[in-house]
Figure 1 (cartoon, rainbow, N blue to C red):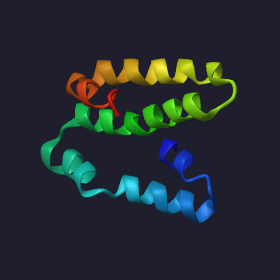
Figure 2: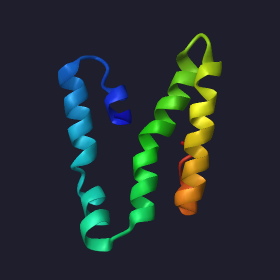
Figure 3: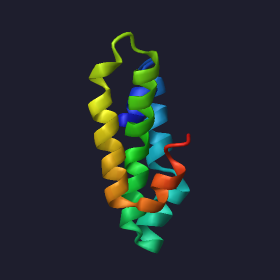
Length: 90
């Protein structure tokens, strides 16, 4: 759903964005080969984090999106701490 938010230019863009994110080889490798569920959780939170910070940056009233960003970063810290070192500087 969060990857869909980046593709708001139209239904086709949303479908392509979501499909490209879901079917990335590294995501599927984490699930089926490595069994890295924590890293999978971090990858699922990444679109939410990027979307919320984009909304904070571009929206005229960013206060609405601050709790989403805080919750997403907190969930990232809880699921996969190594990703917490990489994602916030993005």
